Structure formats: C-alpha cells, structure tokens
Picture 1 (tube, one colour):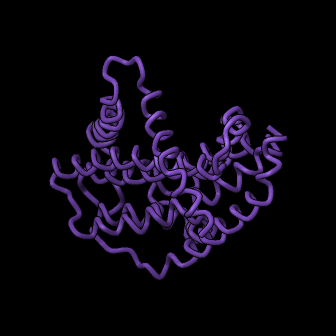
Picture 2 (spheres, one colour):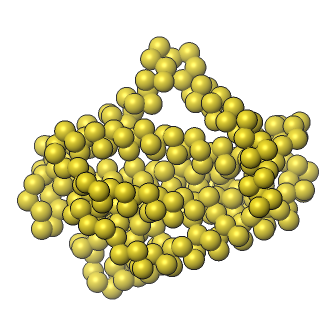
Length: 264
C-alpha cells in the first residue's frame, strides 16, 4: 500500500519523466515521433520478406510461409518488452545517480518509469503487428485478449527481476555486465527463433521446467498461430515466481535504499 501511495503521489513526476524520455529520443530528428512507428514497421517487413519470401521458412506441420514470420515476430516483440525492462532496470539507479543525489523523490519511481515507457513502446509495436495480421487476414479474434494476462504475468517477472538486479548492481557493479550476458543466453534458451518441437524431448522438458518465460512466449505464439486459449493452470509456477520475485526485490530495495546514494 505504501508503494502505491508513493507512486500515486509522484504521478506527475513519473508522467513527466516518461514524456521527457520520449522527447529526448527523437529530439532534433526530422521525422520526430514518426520513428516510433517506422522502426517496428521496418522490423515486421524485414522479417516477413526475409523469412517468408527469401528463405521460405516453414514451421513443422504448417505449409504456409507466413506462419514462421508470425511465430518469430510474436516471440521477438514480447521478449524485447521483457528484456528491455530487465536490462534498463538493472542500470537505472547508476545512470540516474546525479538525480538521486540532488532530488528527493521515491526511488522506486525509476523502474516504474522504465516499465511505463517500455509498455508504450510495446503497444505501438504490437499495434503494427496486429495491422500486419489484418493485412494478411490472420487476426486471431477474441482469443487475442489472452495476451493481456500473459503480458501482465511476464512483466511482473520482469519488474521483479529488474528491481532485484538493479538494487544489487549499485553495490556489485558486475551485475550489470552479467545481466547483459544472461539475457543473451536466456533469449536462445527460449523458443523464439526455433520451434520447441525441433529440440529433443528431454531438452524440451528441462527448458519448459526451468525457463519461466518459455511457456509464456509459447502461449503468445499459440494464440496468434492456432487461435487457442492458453491453459491458465499451467502458469501457476510463473505467477508464484513473479509474486515471489517482486516481494523479494522490493524488500531488498527498501532495506538497501538508504545506502544507495552513498554507493553511487
């Protein structure tokens, strides 16, 4: 409750920081905020042209060449949303050291600002992805709503992990470098570029047991390709992990928050 009150009290500061972040990204560029649309649009077009038209890539059991592009984009866009929050939260307290030393505000606002700005970026990218599905007549329909709880679950894990690593990174600077490498391995250990069906059964069992993001990403891919609702009961481990991570990270953050400025 104290966390929610602190965020609400400084909502104007958080909103202003998010706005300034977007303005700083495109300040001085000729096309300005239009790049928010052009970048993800280019990604969708490149993946579609390269994998469906040039490489003729196909998913096992699916004949059409667009399926792999849809599979890839659904995985990469959601993974990018996850990894962006984790990676930026890990370094935010160090990057904002001057602000933390000079201004008085709830320090928890910094990862919240990252979460909001990343969410806005994701909404833009996801809207373009949906526009692409409309053009190729592959809109999943009402089952698309299943993205919402899956994204909430994914980002609960992301903000919990990001806050934990961000707090530790203030005191142990190797954490930031470690996180970058960890996310690279994590990406390739998640069935985003390759379908889970191509790896051996024993490896798939390990991967889906110990990689909490793998079942979530597979849920997105199942929604857009097979128009099926996820089996919600299979996501209890991710829910428990997300809640546990957030409680652990917030408890650690509150305990070490007072010493952060001295370390920065």
